[in-house]
Amino acid sequence: MRSQAVPGPDPDPSTTTLLRTAYNLLSAAIYRGVAQTGASDLRPAHGNAMEMLAIQDGLRLTDIAARAGMAPQSMGELVDDLVSKGYLERHEDPADRRAKRIYLTGKGRATAAASKAAMRQVEEQISQLLGARQYQQMRRDLAAIAGLDLRSPPAETLVLPAAAPSRRHTREP
Image (cartoon, rainbow, N blue to C red; front, top):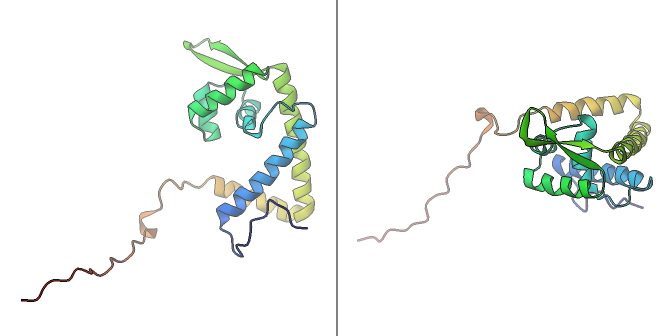
């Protein structure tokens, strides 16, 4: 039986489709692992904030959003929800009283630990599937891709399509 996360009938899916599909599958597995530990009130999107704070606690909202690749307004909604559920808390920034720093609570740290454990299980499954050498190569390849600056392609690779011939007809005298 084919996994539902595998791209559909496209015999040659794009790299972005394959990466997105793999990410969605792995993310869902981690989310299920966290939910099984009792954090059933979380949504997968909450992981965008929780992961950034598990890496570095006490960030400003704008920093969490930037690191997660999200708009600050969207991240603000996630953070507000996580604060109301008891996973995060806001404190004044001692360096700038206008700003707030966001921290994991005890409940948030426990959930982050559960997420890390679920992630290790997923990583182990990938390693078993690929074998140790291919797994390490995949990690190197993904790190290289993650390091690319794709904001604009290099000028020498830009290929503009040739202009289509004009279809305008002129009247002959």
